[in-house]
Image 1: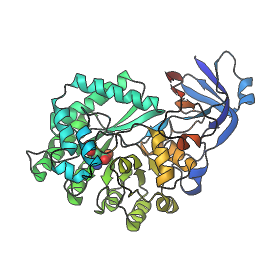
Image 2: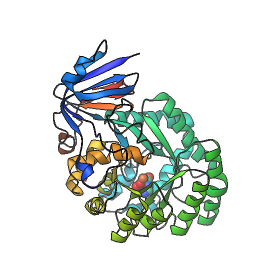
Image 3: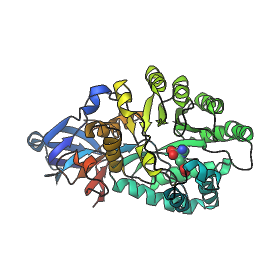
Image 4: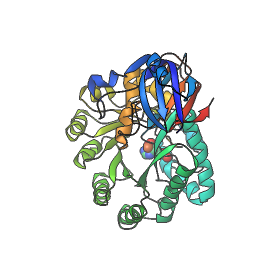
Length: 413
Ligand code: NIG
Ligand code: FE
């Protein structure tokens, strides 16, 4: 039995609370223990409490003195596109000159340009780049990510990406929740209906037979997949036992939020253009909104999703990076906290709840991760600051920390 005692944390941010995603004022309740301690045995949290109490039961445990630090659960990032080849520096530069995401996509950049590079890359090279990305996430304090396919768009290339994700799980301590996003764009050589048919009759059955994904996602947007096409894909995925999520109402309000409610999805992601009716539909169906302010920022837009209205409506809001080469090249959850507070008027406490425990429930792992409570995995971060609000306050710099996955230190800065 290996054991570890973390003692004297200035703030032990437990997020202890009801065993479900947090809503309304619960989002502000972080369950902080000042001068807190935590005992870890065999990768799991055994007890949490005032440091003096924990110290009494330390026995032969290794001691980690967390004086002057914030200790909290590792971030859970519920929306990333972790596997891709290359980057999108040309798109970035064009946007800096004023072109829009849609204009650049039409002119040969956008998702398609990453698809070409990803198809051309070998599984080995993709894995090497994915490892680099995974280490960025760990370095920013994230211990679990959802990660999508979507830059392959042929049966073999989509499977290649999902297999890279499966291999990545073996090679890095980052926990990975895989999502099939075959419906990310329509490939150039096929009509939308031909491609839809391929996704439904070939990709989905292969992905589920090989158990390569837990979720199915779709980019429901003008010029990508419309409401009817999205519904067809998601219905089929549901029949095959996948949980559902979707990129909806990002650039236009197409009724995507309502579709996710109708489909009984686990998550509706983006929602920049979602109106009050969309919010009401999500509430009625108990769908969690996953807000991605990094993509709004990096696209140079100011149209952030209406986080306050969503919280007031009683939705269990989640925050994520949307890490991808086109619209959100950041793996940093602290950057997302900064944007959530400054641009969407969430409080630092709400933002932390949205990126830990609420995200864990969103990935169907609320019983294992997302808070520091007895019985959960000892996935936690130690930040070199004394107040959790500093994580959202300082921006554009890393706050040094160390990071633990199942009780083992995997990053030390
Ligand atoms: O979440 N909106 C669609 N997918 C990504 C962007 C992907 C890309 O541009 O490569 C997003 O913003
Ligand atoms: Fe995305």
